[in-house]
Image (cartoon, rainbow, N blue to C red; front, side, top):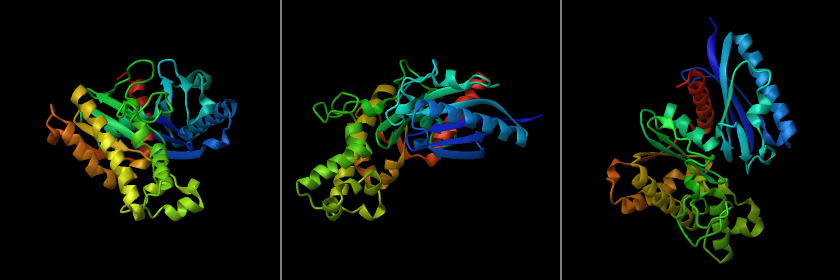
Length: 324
């Protein structure tokens, strides 16, 4: 009898990462490619179709049987329709009926979900949220994403917008977010907006070790720059991550008061600065949690790193194919 596996696909703005995963969550085979190598929708769908064929060939050669596939995509997703409505980081996927286009000829089903939701699902299955009935997952990157696990299941909501903590308002008259609203958490805690704030402060004469770089090549200051360990005592960077931590604490407190969730897992590349923003986050969270015992809330960094999305995509496929 062939060993069952699922195909997990994490489709990001920089790379597409794929893996064949067994029922315990072990990655048996993996490969990836640059998203930029697929500049338009036709090229992207055609390349992904080739990856599905490769997965079939790899499974056959290893004596595995693919039961299903899960795909994570950033942006607004309609999972039941298998459709990407809008993907700011992968614009080639805008208004794409992805599952319908990839399914012909496949002997197994495909399932689509938002990538932040799959981060939460992966961390709940194999990472920092394992064993918890309820969990909030937060991803810090170019933007701020989120996913909710309620009663052990991913909360889907409606219209492809569940778990969007990045678009909770934390500063009503703040910066205008890319979503069109003002003062979203994303404008305070994401890499894009934090870099913009740092450059604004430097333009006003703020003291920082970044000044020389800013004056020589301002575009070289990116989210990856701010999380470098060498900058963790820089006065301006410390102020920047105090803003990140306080705004996260404010938003998390609102979610805890609303849903009674006590496990919050924070991941994403910008969260590599966890040690810098953890204290202001906790201080703000404890200050604002008036109706929920703050000592009962666990806020912690993710455990799975870049594999959280793959784990979530695999879990999605396993749950859907097994009807659980």
